[in-house]
Length: 194
Image (cartoon, rainbow, N blue to C red; front, top):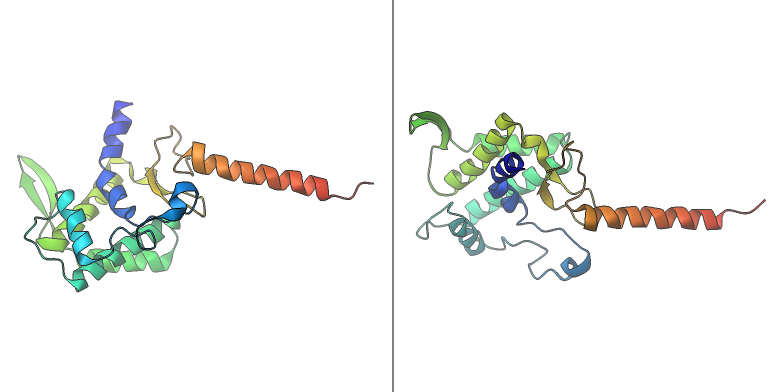
């Protein structure tokens, strides 16, 4: 279990970022306080999020252009998680990633990939590096988006066989299975008897 926790922790920051867009529309989430489920509602909100996670200092400014870029990055990343064969999402993410300079350095005697600039590019660079590290250590395929149409929460699939489809089997998985069961029962009761 410790290995799975360690693998999951390497993606925590990226998962947290992607879930700043909360599309859950069931139960208590139906009354989401944030504007349209988005906790990044302004450059100031983005700055608070970055500072809280150690991705930026309090003195750094977040411009409207930078704010829009971060939201484009999040939108493309979420679209790719929703459908990994989405060519438009892949192209949009490739275009955005190409604008973030990264460089290889020897840090504490070991090679490391680090952001090559400051500000928002540095923060986005750290998110990109988290994705690259996940690909290298084999945890990338565990980053998923919940299959429930009224959820789409990004989660780390800790299941042994890596076949998880829902952020929570007890909530989203159970709701879907209950819905399917009720549809089957309704279909059986509507059949004309012979």
